[in-house]
Length: 288
Image (tube, rainbow, N blue to C red; front, side, top):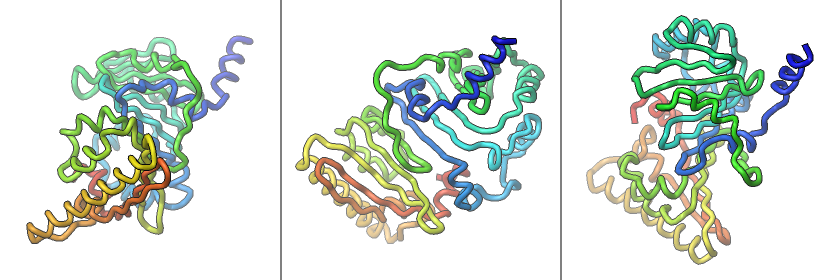
């Protein structure tokens, strides 16, 4: 009984966002953070999520089986897109018994707290376990116990996460291999290649989102040069669109990227893009 109480108390303790980041693969990983609770409390989550009728039928059936409504039940998610797979900490209210029953009834298995199941392809092996009472550690990788490895903590001090309900941190190594970036974004990626990493913060701005770029450079001269190059890239993209007798569309990357403005502050480069709801809807539906 004492051991069970100890486990319960351990899992009741919160795990800070910084501590979660230290448990994710850091090298060459794109980190994405979404605070659903903050977006929900501000009314913005309902704006960008769309009606339930728009959800994939297969997903709706899965969500019903495990008693999960992501709009109401998820509070936060931290995701690492790494070369070896996707690694996530998801904070919310989970019906762990329903999750285990779903895995066992779908050809997977649960041993102790760790559950494993094959995804939509053989190389997509999904593993998860309760890191805390309301915190799931989940991995999609070729390794079917990848989630278990998220118990390990990287050495060093806790990182300082960005202060925003939604943010993305991209390492320079990913920017330097930017062939997979969407059309129109590659010239911006090339400009940012020299950075160790770049951070994008996404915050509500009226009835839309705004993206804020932050890059720390070696010195103020490099920061001023990078801000100038980003401004030139924006102007060039506008000119290319005009030559094609087209108009930037707020619902795709042409509208977002041509609306950017940039400045340098000491060693930092600051960028700002307004993002309309139509762009978010296209991004979530896979239309971009």
